Image (cartoon, rainbow, N blue to C red):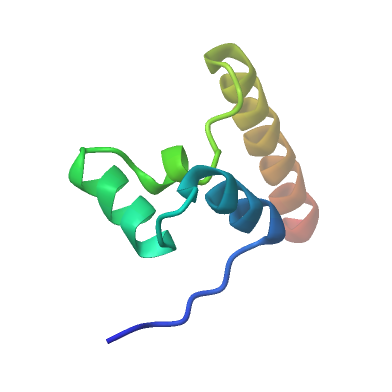
Length: 72
C-alpha cells in the first residue's frame, strides 16, 4: 500500500539528490533502519550548534515579546 505525503520543494530536491536510482521509500527506510533521522535524509541540520542555539534564543525572545503584546 502507498501513502501520499506533502513535502516542501527544498525537501523534495534534497530527497531527489539523495536517492539516485533508488525509490524515495528505499532512501527513507534505509536511513531510518540505520538509526538515522528524516532530518538527515532531507538535508536539515544545516546550522552549526552555536547558530542553532542563537536562533532558538531569538525565537524564544520574539515569542515572549509577542505574548506580552497580546496580554496587554
